[in-house]
Length: 107
Image 1 (cartoon, rainbow, N blue to C red):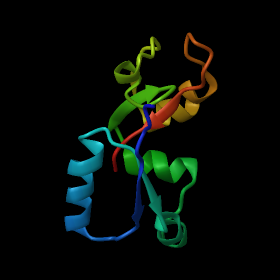
Image 2 (cartoon, helix red, strand yellow):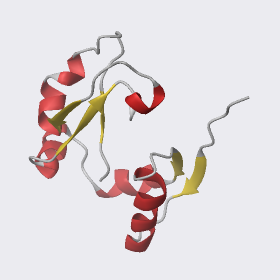
Image 3 (cartoon, one colour):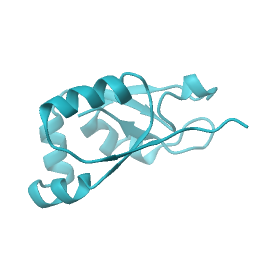
Image 4 (cartoon, one colour):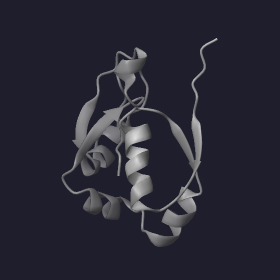
């Protein structure tokens, strides 16, 4: 019986926690459920398309139907785009499998 273990974390806004998280989860491609993060971010930042695109700038990230799909047997190719491009184009497209694309980036 194969099960995917998902870590359940509580949000902590500190740089050392961010480095540990990047190492233990982002780099390791390990899923995590972070509780309490939205409360802090929703109260302190603007999340409109224009603001997000301006903050992201020319940084690119991968667009996939699932993150790291090739590691899980997905045949859908990834596409590397800016957030602005994703919001204008790829968000309206579907992968060859028919699944919608999602923008995955570590911030």
